[in-house]
Length: 289
Image 1 (tube, rainbow, N blue to C red):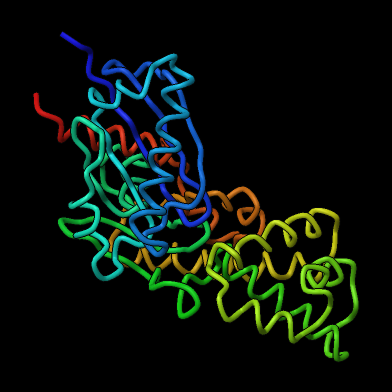
Image 2 (tube, one colour):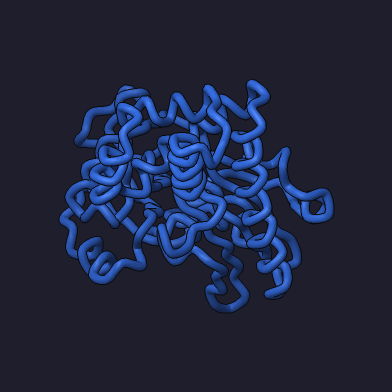
Protein backbone atom coordinates (compact mmCIF):
# COMPACT_ATOMS: atom_id res chain seq x y z
CA UNK A 1 0.00 0.00 0.00
CA UNK A 2 1.32 3.43 -0.97
CA UNK A 3 2.00 5.69 2.01
CA UNK A 4 -0.35 8.65 2.38
CA UNK A 5 1.33 12.04 2.53
CA UNK A 6 0.01 15.31 3.94
CA UNK A 7 0.47 18.78 2.54
CA UNK A 8 -0.21 22.05 4.32
CA UNK A 9 -0.54 25.12 2.09
CA UNK A 10 -0.52 28.72 3.31
CA UNK A 11 -1.61 30.90 0.40
CA UNK A 12 -1.44 34.64 1.04
CA UNK A 13 -1.51 37.82 -0.96
CA UNK A 14 2.28 37.93 -1.35
CA UNK A 15 3.43 34.31 -1.36
CA UNK A 16 2.31 30.72 -1.12
CA UNK A 17 4.13 28.25 1.11
CA UNK A 18 3.72 24.48 1.31
CA UNK A 19 5.05 21.76 3.62
CA UNK A 20 4.93 18.03 2.91
CA UNK A 21 4.91 15.55 5.77
CA UNK A 22 4.43 11.86 6.45
CA UNK A 23 1.60 10.59 8.64
CA UNK A 24 3.93 10.53 11.66
CA UNK A 25 4.94 14.18 11.18
CA UNK A 26 8.29 13.79 9.44
CA UNK A 27 8.94 16.78 7.17
CA UNK A 28 9.85 15.70 3.65
CA UNK A 29 10.05 19.02 1.88
CA UNK A 30 8.89 22.61 1.64
CA UNK A 31 8.13 24.93 -1.24
CA UNK A 32 7.36 28.55 -1.95
CA UNK A 33 5.77 30.36 -4.88
CA UNK A 34 3.93 33.56 -5.74
CA UNK A 35 0.66 35.07 -4.47
CA UNK A 36 -2.25 32.67 -3.94
CA UNK A 37 -5.06 35.05 -3.04
CA UNK A 38 -8.40 34.30 -4.66
CA UNK A 39 -8.54 38.02 -5.37
CA UNK A 40 -6.32 37.15 -8.37
CA UNK A 41 -8.63 34.33 -9.54
CA UNK A 42 -8.54 30.55 -9.49
CA UNK A 43 -5.96 30.21 -12.27
CA UNK A 44 -3.36 32.31 -10.46
CA UNK A 45 -4.13 30.73 -7.07
CA UNK A 46 -4.02 27.15 -8.37
CA UNK A 47 -0.75 27.82 -10.22
CA UNK A 48 0.85 29.10 -7.01
CA UNK A 49 -0.48 26.16 -4.97
CA UNK A 50 0.91 23.65 -7.45
CA UNK A 51 4.18 25.56 -7.77
CA UNK A 52 4.80 25.38 -4.02
CA UNK A 53 3.64 21.75 -3.88
CA UNK A 54 5.98 20.70 -6.69
CA UNK A 55 8.92 22.37 -4.98
CA UNK A 56 8.11 20.47 -1.78
CA UNK A 57 7.95 17.22 -3.77
CA UNK A 58 11.28 17.97 -5.42
CA UNK A 59 12.91 18.49 -2.00
CA UNK A 60 11.47 15.14 -0.96
CA UNK A 61 12.91 13.47 -4.06
CA UNK A 62 9.43 12.61 -5.33
CA UNK A 63 7.92 12.99 -8.78
CA UNK A 64 4.70 14.87 -9.50
CA UNK A 65 2.90 11.51 -9.67
CA UNK A 66 3.12 11.40 -5.87
CA UNK A 67 0.45 14.13 -5.67
CA UNK A 68 -2.12 11.38 -6.19
CA UNK A 69 -1.22 10.14 -2.69
CA UNK A 70 -1.26 13.57 -1.06
CA UNK A 71 -4.03 14.85 1.21
CA UNK A 72 -3.90 18.62 1.21
CA UNK A 73 -5.18 21.22 3.66
CA UNK A 74 -5.14 24.49 1.75
CA UNK A 75 -5.64 27.95 3.20
CA UNK A 76 -6.08 30.88 0.83
CA UNK A 77 -6.59 34.60 1.20
CA UNK A 78 -9.66 35.99 -0.50
CA UNK A 79 -11.97 32.99 -0.06
CA UNK A 80 -14.71 35.43 0.92
CA UNK A 81 -14.80 36.93 -2.56
CA UNK A 82 -17.96 36.15 -4.51
CA UNK A 83 -17.57 32.87 -6.39
CA UNK A 84 -14.20 32.00 -4.81
CA UNK A 85 -15.27 28.90 -2.93
CA UNK A 86 -17.30 27.60 -5.86
CA UNK A 87 -14.27 27.98 -8.11
CA UNK A 88 -12.10 26.07 -5.64
CA UNK A 89 -14.59 23.23 -5.35
CA UNK A 90 -14.74 22.94 -9.15
CA UNK A 91 -10.95 22.90 -9.54
CA UNK A 92 -9.74 19.57 -10.95
CA UNK A 93 -6.69 19.36 -8.69
CA UNK A 94 -4.21 16.45 -8.75
CA UNK A 95 -4.36 15.63 -5.03
CA UNK A 96 -5.90 12.52 -3.53
CA UNK A 97 -8.16 14.91 -1.65
CA UNK A 98 -8.02 18.63 -0.86
CA UNK A 99 -9.88 20.85 1.59
CA UNK A 100 -10.01 24.61 1.23
CA UNK A 101 -10.36 27.20 3.97
CA UNK A 102 -9.45 30.84 4.50
CA UNK A 103 -5.80 31.42 5.32
CA UNK A 104 -6.82 32.78 8.71
CA UNK A 105 -8.53 29.51 9.67
CA UNK A 106 -5.38 27.52 8.96
CA UNK A 107 -3.28 30.03 10.89
CA UNK A 108 -5.64 29.56 13.84
CA UNK A 109 -5.44 25.75 13.57
CA UNK A 110 -1.66 25.94 13.61
CA UNK A 111 -1.51 28.48 16.41
CA UNK A 112 -3.54 26.45 18.90
CA UNK A 113 -3.88 22.98 17.38
CA UNK A 114 -7.63 23.51 17.15
CA UNK A 115 -8.03 24.54 20.79
CA UNK A 116 -9.68 27.77 21.95
CA UNK A 117 -7.91 30.97 21.07
CA UNK A 118 -7.86 33.88 18.70
CA UNK A 119 -5.34 35.17 16.21
CA UNK A 120 -4.51 38.41 14.48
CA UNK A 121 -3.03 37.96 11.03
CA UNK A 122 -0.35 40.53 10.11
CA UNK A 123 0.52 39.99 6.46
CA UNK A 124 -0.38 41.55 3.15
CA UNK A 125 -3.81 41.96 4.76
CA UNK A 126 -4.91 41.87 8.39
CA UNK A 127 -7.77 40.29 10.30
CA UNK A 128 -8.63 39.16 13.81
CA UNK A 129 -10.31 35.77 14.12
CA UNK A 130 -11.54 33.54 16.90
CA UNK A 131 -13.72 30.45 16.86
CA UNK A 132 -16.32 29.71 19.51
CA UNK A 133 -18.72 27.34 17.81
CA UNK A 134 -18.68 29.82 14.93
CA UNK A 135 -16.25 32.06 13.13
CA UNK A 136 -15.98 35.45 14.80
CA UNK A 137 -14.01 37.96 12.75
CA UNK A 138 -12.79 41.45 13.45
CA UNK A 139 -11.83 43.59 10.49
CA UNK A 140 -10.27 41.98 7.45
CA UNK A 141 -12.85 43.29 4.98
CA UNK A 142 -10.22 43.88 2.33
CA UNK A 143 -7.88 46.65 1.26
CA UNK A 144 -8.28 49.62 1.02
CA UNK A 145 -11.50 49.84 3.06
CA UNK A 146 -10.07 47.65 5.85
CA UNK A 147 -6.94 45.57 6.62
CA UNK A 148 -5.54 48.23 8.93
CA UNK A 149 -1.99 47.55 10.10
CA UNK A 150 -1.31 45.23 7.16
CA UNK A 151 1.54 45.33 4.69
CA UNK A 152 -0.75 46.93 2.11
CA UNK A 153 -1.84 49.55 4.65
CA UNK A 154 1.78 50.31 5.57
CA UNK A 155 2.72 50.59 1.90
CA UNK A 156 -0.16 52.96 1.17
CA UNK A 157 0.85 55.20 4.06
CA UNK A 158 4.46 55.15 2.88
CA UNK A 159 3.40 56.43 -0.53
CA UNK A 160 1.13 59.06 1.01
CA UNK A 161 3.92 60.31 3.24
CA UNK A 162 6.38 60.41 0.37
CA UNK A 163 4.00 62.43 -1.79
CA UNK A 164 3.66 64.96 1.01
CA UNK A 165 7.40 65.57 0.90
CA UNK A 166 7.11 66.72 -2.71
CA UNK A 167 4.96 69.74 -1.84
CA UNK A 168 6.59 70.58 1.47
CA UNK A 169 4.02 69.08 3.84
CA UNK A 170 6.62 66.65 5.17
CA UNK A 171 10.40 66.71 5.48
CA UNK A 172 12.45 65.23 2.66
CA UNK A 173 14.14 62.00 3.80
CA UNK A 174 16.09 59.13 2.28
CA UNK A 175 13.05 56.99 3.03
CA UNK A 176 10.73 59.18 0.94
CA UNK A 177 13.37 59.45 -1.78
CA UNK A 178 13.53 55.65 -2.14
CA UNK A 179 9.77 55.30 -2.31
CA UNK A 180 9.43 58.07 -4.87
CA UNK A 181 12.27 56.58 -6.89
CA UNK A 182 9.87 53.83 -7.95
CA UNK A 183 7.74 56.49 -9.63
CA UNK A 184 10.41 58.84 -11.02
CA UNK A 185 9.31 61.29 -8.27
CA UNK A 186 6.29 62.12 -10.42
CA UNK A 187 2.83 62.23 -8.77
CA UNK A 188 1.22 61.56 -12.15
CA UNK A 189 3.07 58.23 -12.32
CA UNK A 190 1.88 57.38 -8.81
CA UNK A 191 -1.71 58.13 -9.78
CA UNK A 192 -1.51 55.99 -12.91
CA UNK A 193 0.08 53.13 -10.97
CA UNK A 194 -2.57 53.31 -8.23
CA UNK A 195 -5.38 52.78 -10.73
CA UNK A 196 -4.41 49.12 -11.19
CA UNK A 197 -2.21 48.39 -8.15
CA UNK A 198 -3.17 45.39 -6.01
CA UNK A 199 -2.77 44.99 -2.24
CA UNK A 200 0.35 42.93 -3.00
CA UNK A 201 1.79 45.86 -4.97
CA UNK A 202 1.21 48.22 -2.05
CA UNK A 203 2.57 45.68 0.45
CA UNK A 204 5.88 45.58 -1.42
CA UNK A 205 6.61 49.05 -0.02
CA UNK A 206 6.38 47.72 3.53
CA UNK A 207 9.87 46.29 3.02
CA UNK A 208 11.15 49.82 2.33
CA UNK A 209 9.50 51.05 5.53
CA UNK A 210 11.02 48.21 7.56
CA UNK A 211 14.51 48.86 6.16
CA UNK A 212 14.47 52.57 6.98
CA UNK A 213 12.88 52.02 10.39
CA UNK A 214 15.73 49.64 11.23
CA UNK A 215 18.15 52.41 10.21
CA UNK A 216 16.49 54.79 12.67
CA UNK A 217 14.41 56.89 10.26
CA UNK A 218 11.63 58.43 12.43
CA UNK A 219 9.08 58.71 9.62
CA UNK A 220 9.41 55.02 8.79
CA UNK A 221 9.32 54.03 12.46
CA UNK A 222 6.16 56.08 12.91
CA UNK A 223 4.44 54.12 10.12
CA UNK A 224 5.25 50.83 11.88
CA UNK A 225 4.10 52.31 15.17
CA UNK A 226 0.80 53.31 13.56
CA UNK A 227 0.38 49.81 12.12
CA UNK A 228 1.11 48.29 15.54
CA UNK A 229 -1.65 50.37 17.13
CA UNK A 230 -4.13 48.95 14.62
CA UNK A 231 -2.88 45.39 15.14
CA UNK A 232 -3.14 45.87 18.92
CA UNK A 233 -6.70 47.10 18.44
CA UNK A 234 -7.56 43.92 16.55
CA UNK A 235 -5.98 41.82 19.30
CA UNK A 236 -7.92 43.61 22.02
CA UNK A 237 -11.15 43.24 20.05
CA UNK A 238 -10.58 39.49 19.62
CA UNK A 239 -10.07 39.16 23.37
CA UNK A 240 -13.21 41.20 24.00
CA UNK A 241 -15.15 38.81 21.77
CA UNK A 242 -14.37 35.97 24.19
CA UNK A 243 -11.06 34.51 23.07
CA UNK A 244 -9.13 33.24 26.12
CA UNK A 245 -5.82 34.12 24.44
CA UNK A 246 -4.59 35.73 21.24
CA UNK A 247 -1.54 35.18 19.06
CA UNK A 248 -0.05 37.28 16.28
CA UNK A 249 0.73 35.41 13.05
CA UNK A 250 1.99 36.38 9.62
CA UNK A 251 5.08 37.66 7.89
CA UNK A 252 5.07 41.13 9.47
CA UNK A 253 4.83 40.06 13.11
CA UNK A 254 8.54 40.30 13.91
CA UNK A 255 8.68 43.87 12.57
CA UNK A 256 5.48 45.13 14.18
CA UNK A 257 5.84 43.39 17.55
CA UNK A 258 8.41 45.87 18.98
CA UNK A 259 5.89 48.68 18.50
CA UNK A 260 2.89 46.96 20.09
CA UNK A 261 1.73 48.94 23.15
CA UNK A 262 2.96 47.30 26.36
CA UNK A 263 -0.50 46.68 27.80
CA UNK A 264 -1.52 44.65 24.75
CA UNK A 265 1.87 42.96 24.35
CA UNK A 266 1.48 41.51 27.84
CA UNK A 267 -1.73 39.74 26.72
CA UNK A 268 -0.30 38.16 23.57
CA UNK A 269 0.52 34.44 23.40
CA UNK A 270 3.11 32.79 21.16
CA UNK A 271 1.56 30.54 18.47
CA UNK A 272 2.36 26.84 18.74
CA UNK A 273 2.93 26.38 15.01
CA UNK A 274 2.36 28.04 11.64
CA UNK A 275 -0.43 27.94 9.07
CA UNK A 276 1.21 25.12 7.11
CA UNK A 277 1.03 22.99 10.25
CA UNK A 278 -2.62 24.02 10.44
CA UNK A 279 -3.16 22.80 6.89
CA UNK A 280 -1.58 19.46 7.65
CA UNK A 281 -3.74 19.13 10.76
CA UNK A 282 -6.83 19.95 8.69
CA UNK A 283 -5.93 17.27 6.15
CA UNK A 284 -5.30 14.67 8.86
CA UNK A 285 -8.60 15.45 10.57
CA UNK A 286 -10.60 15.16 7.35
CA UNK A 287 -8.78 12.43 5.45
CA UNK A 288 -10.51 9.04 5.32
CA UNK A 289 -9.39 6.77 8.13
